[in-house]
Image 1 (spheres, rainbow, N blue to C red):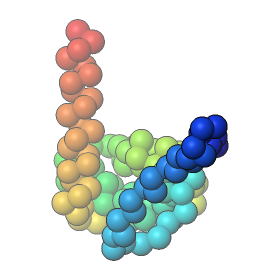
Image 2: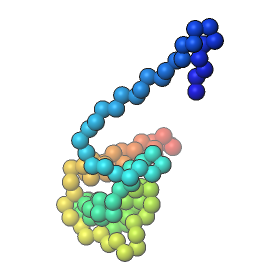
Image 3: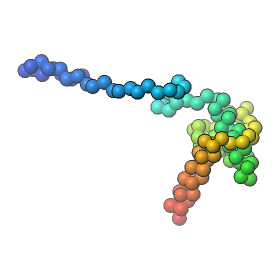
Image 4: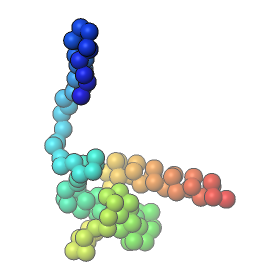
Length: 108
């Protein structure tokens, strides 16, 4: 808290932060990150499993990508039901593949 000037009594006031409202869904924020509903994880898991099938990758690919995106493993009861991936999922997986290959180049 700021102190008043002893000569004139002026008390500095902090400018308020400007908050710009935006359309969107409200979400619980935990440790600075919005938490994600289980349904979103299931949808992501299904789409990545579909992408893994499409690219001829092993089923474990989807498991590890879910773990990478959400920070923890999918629950044991959650099974992947492959379906066509959305453009967002394709883009995210491509970005992770690019990051992996760049890391491999740097390590050599």
